[in-house]
Image 1 (cartoon, rainbow, N blue to C red):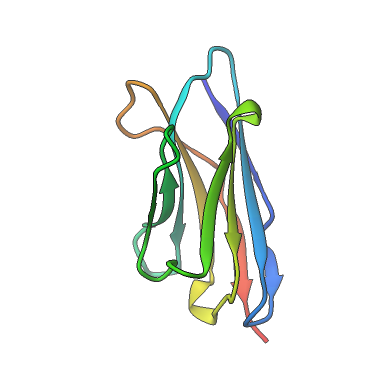
Image 2: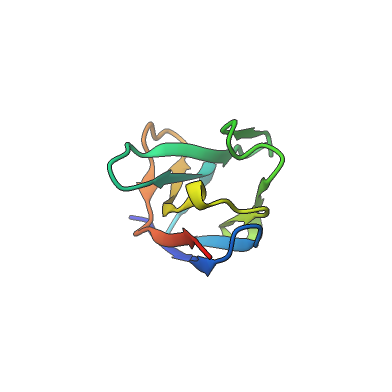
Length: 117
């Protein structure tokens, strides 16, 4: 079993920045891909960014040029640096960690990001 702990959400003004972190722990953890998703009220959960074990990245169009995903394999941690935040980025952000051999992976508990003046 893998436990995920997210941190870094909060309230920020438009144009501001936040950095989300998600750390995975558990015995025998061997991580393949890591990613961030978000869900706004009334909307489905959507991909924001993901990163593979080989550091290949994939971003939603809405995140390109503003968000950067990175990972620290020694710490089993994935980060999401979010710059130039907009009100439409307001959502609960969820970390997803997929082990080798898994299809769906594990989900974090979610962290609220609110962009408002």
